[in-house]
Image (tube, rainbow, N blue to C red; front, side, top):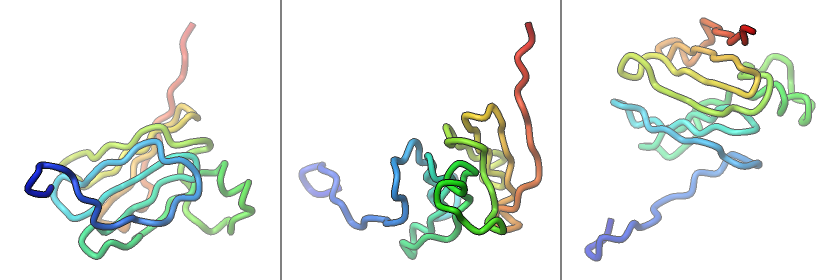
Length: 119
């Protein structure tokens, strides 16, 4: 923010090619996560570089991506949330699934919650 209380753009983080639905800053570390159609992008805000991409299955099919790339949700990522003071990243998608990633293990997937509609 400058002396006139206006925000000043310092850096543009380049990575997404489609729209970004949500962003969230880590509660402790210099990390920002952005998410949308393409999946989840994890940024180092101090170095201003992209650390990791967790692609959505939808984007992997469109881009014919390598199947060894870590997969986020089946469709578009709708929301992200830091849990337990930033040690777990929760990712929710249009596929009604919430995937949990372990930050200490370089955002490795470790748990899946699926939502089921009861009639």
